[in-house]
Length: 409
Image 1 (spheres, rainbow, N blue to C red):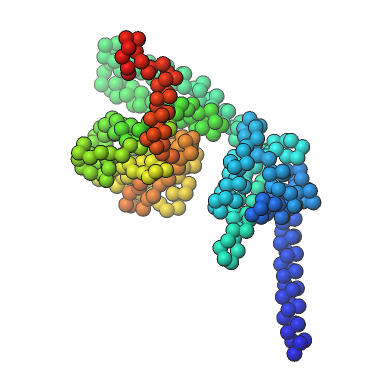
Image 2 (cartoon, rainbow, N blue to C red):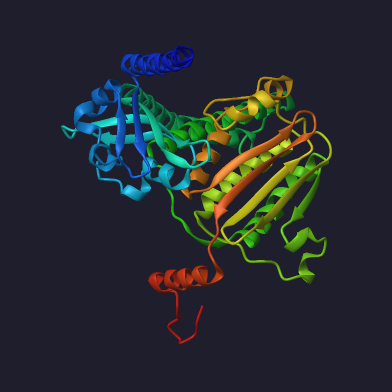
């Protein structure tokens, strides 16, 4: 009887030993770094791949606080605060987090570009017991991408000048006060002028995308009230929708009422660059108009204590489910008859994402094929008190708080 009980127990022990051996073989074989950190921040597993990337051996790293081994640095080589690192965020939030733009200072103080994914570990009671991080050295890829971005930036900048000159000469040729041309020649010149403008926009998009990737995007954030800011934009944008025969709904008041002047609209303040946000909203609106043949465009505004949310909804053809996850990637375009007819660079939504992320915001789309799409923008909201204090400080710093005659602005 005892022998019968002992046999399964021995088999189980052997199975567990085999599973542990298999895991050890896998961890030792892969080139990616793998690290397991418990809830106290102590490194419990550190595979050879992690050692190659960081310069620490498993014997040195295991048992140490992760902060002693993983020293994150920014693009200037300055240390990143512990609370801002991906490990700290994952340990406190119990969420899976990915960072494709991280850099580590190795044991020998060499900066290593890494792509890092951290996921929480939970037990059978749903209690977090630690995190596991998987990372790889992407220094070569990042250097290649930097060189490509530099080339695109330089080429785009250099080519904008002759393109602008060509556009200027074409404009002069089309000016009846300057040149006298027949109808057929005018038709040719107008087509050339339109193509030149399109080419100029392509170079501008390429230049902007390159700057967005390497952190050179010009950005001057200030406090703006998103509701009034968007209302002004809508009044400028509505003509393109009306020209195509589309209805434009603007639900920028409380509750989306049809009579916004009779209610007190909540004030949604955010710290953003108005020119950059205008670029984002205009791009999303223009896309909605381009890809909607009939129906309406709806611009909405809502929020809570933490977030301001803008939405742009259309009744267009929608986006296939398999394309949605890739929509904000650089040069990605949905491949169907609509996009091939309309054209585009595949950079607009990528630039929108980069701009929104400058303000720790989020942009995404919800779409059903053949039933339309809704693009959402979430921005961190400022309280009215904080916004007013920051506006007063801006006014004082700019020297516009008072006028020479004693009046106020």
